[in-house]
Image (tube, rainbow, N blue to C red):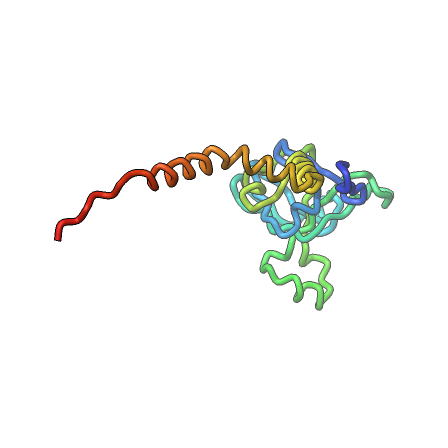
Length: 181
């Protein structure tokens, strides 16, 4: 969970994946790449009878559909987070229509290991620090008045504008050679 100005959201948990902290909303519809062998399950509970797919290193675990909290043996929420993946055939609407609980599958996030943060970044997922920095830059830019913005433009482009004006002014005073007809 992060907070900066108007960017505050405590309802969407943050998770560590591949050593990088992400807000779960940044992961939706992204493909998760395994860096080690991972076990997926048909329901968000680890059990021998519930196993779905074993995904090997450098293989795509799946495209993230959502997330749910995990349950302990007594059926109580245990604080774990499970990522939910689209069915292997990629057709979520078919799975929902036939209400087959084994069409979607899940992977339990364990200390952020076993997956590639780089692959997520390449798909446009922003880490929490990146989101905070982006929000701070946006807020700083919005809080600038017109004179501050003009100052930034002049600092950036001023030398070029002055150089161009000098060249144009000098060109007015340089006589052009006469053409012989």
